[in-house]
Image (cartoon, rainbow, N blue to C red; front, side):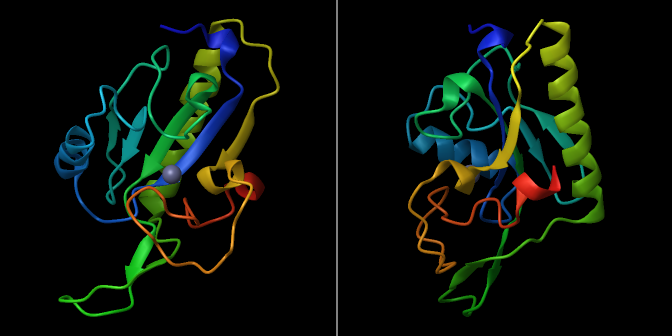
Length: 158
Ligand SMILES: [Zn+2]
């Protein structure tokens, strides 16, 4: 458990694929993670999955997890190759339903922080904004090592 007062960031992610909740969770299992990658996961249709209480630590941003609430939308890439040989490129694929859901998740997090006496100036930014070395080539190297995550400028938008 952590206290709300430790939180300094709300991080926005994309899943870098179009797998559903079950396949994403199965992937985390193969990595041996004990906690989910994100607190909230938003499907293409805007469905919000509450994977973890905000009071618990998720596994979204290496080195920052204790201070971060992680919110993820499914998508964030497009296939520029073929079905047989996909080449995944970063793209903002958020649907209107996902945009609305993202806002409501951020609001939910902010209200939880307020209720739990967090007085920090909360920084809302994309996963990529935590990373100091971006080469901006837009190529997805592997799941969740995506350099462009969440494939849009979350810092500007939120
Ligand atoms: Zn991410």
